[in-house]
Length: 116
Image 1 (cartoon, rainbow, N blue to C red):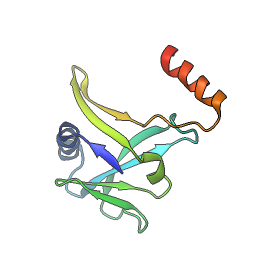
Image 2: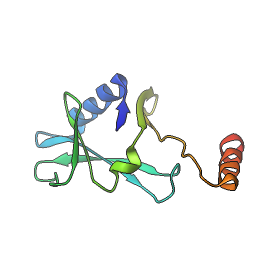
Image 3: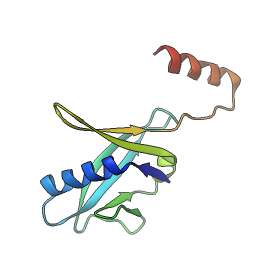
Image 4: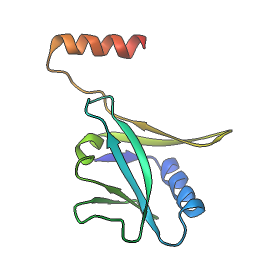
């Protein structure tokens, strides 16, 4: 489903330990938006009582990632990495580039990718 680098796992675990408290079970990863290639991702703490029966749960060793059924297909092929910065941790969430069926849409995407 998705790939999380070892650096990102360590960074996310550190964040959970520092900010999560004792009743924190893991993180919820949500993908918002309707346009492939333009989704926005967001993390939220998952606490006791928060998990939903239809969640997809990904075991990351020291913590779990919870994904709702609506976000699951949007997160297919996503890669998550971590970079420490002078402002604090930075998580890079990279969505795969969508494949376009329409030639005009493919050309528009190419222009956006190369020039914007």
